Image (cartoon, rainbow, N blue to C red; front, side, top):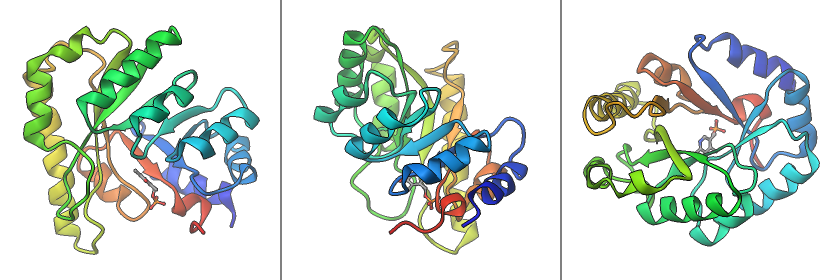
Length: 221
Ligand SMILES: *Cc1c(COP(=O)(O)O)cnc(C)c1O
């Protein structure tokens, strides 16, 4: 696995406004160090224990994104250092992130995860429930979190039309929020979509942040 070569290839395909979260879950520190040596600073992890171990032993200027489902009782372990929580899927979780961020004297950037795939998954807001939460407006009182945008995962399929349709639906939804309930709320600007097998399609549909793992680091065990 030539991690640096893979990383350069992915980076060369990203337009200037699209950032890369290098998804390093299940890969050892050495793999992260190789990407770090090539200049990558944003890494994504999906398990709190694994992330804590890596954060403690790797360079402190790494910006760690938590990309997986986060249980409320685990927030306190990552709150001191996490750069962004990419998959906030309930108001309850947002409240707990705010509480733990306040204890650390921090403001934690978050993305709201939307359920856009055909597949059944347990996680993610529906478009309706997310809009309702935002319109209700209680989140505005949470002074230790900022909502930086939306995140979504397309159906795992080879049907490119379907993938484009799902990413397009997230982009339209983001635009609609930006013009309505999030109008004037400056941090709201990210659309995190696209993984190893579909990031080029996601960029075509307006992604601002791709989360790419196996294309850079190889298959996970
Ligand atoms: C694992 C994971 C990725 C990266 O997946 P690859 O197919 O390896 O690029 C991206 N986003 C989330 C939420 C993930 O859990």
